[in-house]
Image (cartoon, rainbow, N blue to C red; front, side):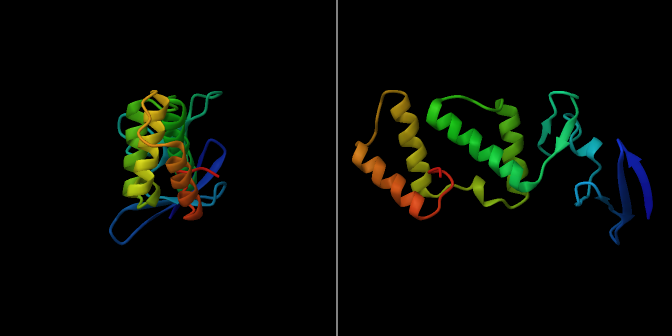
Length: 150
């Protein structure tokens, strides 16, 4: 076991039986298999990390934070046509969520139909009547779908 300081954070690292390094960050209370500087590196990293606009440093996120960003990005795109993330960032985020087994990256048929109808409506080419859309939205809300909003 070794300890080191990283930007005022104490990190404790241990080697696992499979000779992987596992790190624990006491400030965030989280375990990591890959050090932040590697995981969040745009070239070497394979994890979606946020960018702190003040410091320019990349910030590691929890799974829940990544899921919220993903859902916000999808809803923004389908509701208003605005892209919150660049395509490459969105793809990395989606891949990261898939590798972590997140259910939010897998839409069911109703959710896909709902988002498709929303996008078509915004383009001025509705594919269903308002009543049908409202019923679908209500159904998704009753099923507690995150796609239909709160």
